[in-house]
Length: 223
Image 1 (cartoon, helix red, strand yellow):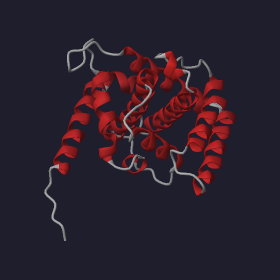
Image 2: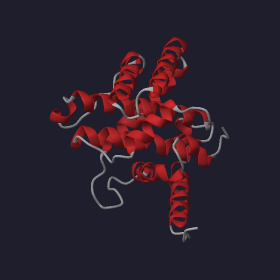
Image 3: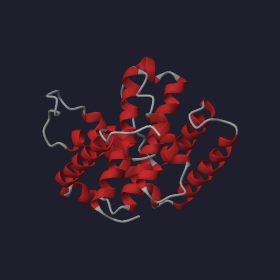
Image 4: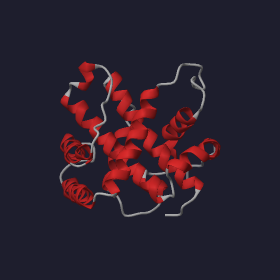
């Protein structure tokens, strides 16, 4: 993977997309239906180095790109004038910290990859978002990433958090965020890059979002 601003922006957007899934399920009990398939596919289909291919195209990262702009904004208010939700920022920072610990721990990393490979085999029998697949990915997160510590304490509505299916989805999204953090690392990301390129990544996200919009506006002809 090329270590450039575009790839760093896309990988960080993918991270924020997964965190969006965490916060929405924790607080609302549900999230946009496309988020879970995007997350799961990024974990189970790894035969490419292209971030666009890993996530099924740039259009699949629109929500993540918007979330990146929102979270990297230095103001305490979002672009819509509402106070920013600092939980998303906290989760993202914790994920980046855990990813650094993961790549330094070869034993846990090997266990994680073995778990992913075993879950990939289940795709012969189940759809990517089947409860068995999600439960398997959630178990991988609990047995590998959670063991690195400190654990991420997800805040939200206790009714939603206490639902086993929701808890599994949250852990799957967190594992997807780790995947995105690994891509961020491969693209040359790091603590200093996040600090010095904050405004550049916001601008890059805007450029990519505009390109997606222009592509969507292109007329089509049936043939």
